[in-house]
Length: 392
Ligand SMILES: [Zn+2]
Image (cartoon, rainbow, N blue to C red):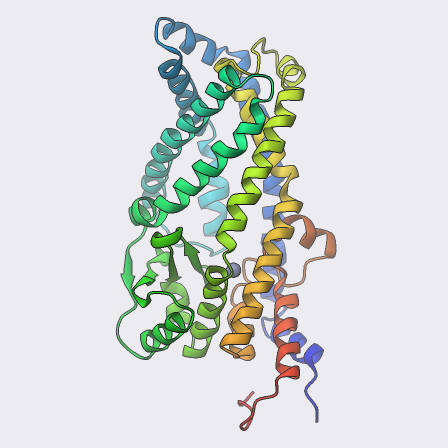
């Protein structure tokens, strides 16, 4: 009997069982709604800060300070205070709901402790970035928003460069993969792709999440491949090879540079639009601040979260293209379509494998697992194994 990719795909997905499929669909649909409600929450926070004139008061207290310090402190104050105000929302979406769905086993104390570290980093870097934006508005004239693309590119590159060295070690423990067959296999794969095998790590991803995951982070010399202990524990050797092939694909195909370019172009568009509509939106919230006035920062942040929500289909479509390319790279280099498929099925618990077309287009950063498994099975059909086929 000849191999039927459609039937093989169906078998992989159906093997999850109707209950797990229903739960995954429920979780995924809920997450999609949360991204919408996140914009509503941002709007409420902006309304609260504008009506209570919180930044006006802080700004008045800083009256005699210079532009840079004053702007930095006003932005930092908003980032910090708004995070505190939205803590219940963050606890619900980031911890309670994740725990309820079995996606995390992180104790609340650890979640809050790590959240505090993340908040400090976010406040400092965020306030610095927006100090740059306000400086551009002051100095660069009417077309300041063109320069925001350069600022965004510099900021994203800096964060990508620093992330594996400075930021990620604050949250997880990164170690070389221990000696053994897994390490041997990964070293061969890394060498083939021209990657220093010293840059393949495992990390205690289980601390935050039960998700089966791996990632590439960093730029240039700081770039590295990291595999979560969840993936290493729950996977066969072939599955680890297939997943690592996918991650090496991102690395070799330079997807990180696509991210830098796309986000920078998006920043230009976003700040251009913000420049045009800011006065009307600010008035709607009851603020008299102009776009160059840090007292209007909450309004600018609301516009940012609205644009980020609306830009999802564009960003996700680009991301899905890269993910398909990385899958293809894994198939071409490692040629383990069944291992890739069974590893992908393990990610279907938190990304419903059978979304409808609109859902996938708008919200999915990866093609649906069904689509990805199907691509692997099509590859398998086109590249029949030379020896005896692997047992089913
Ligand atoms: Zn990927």
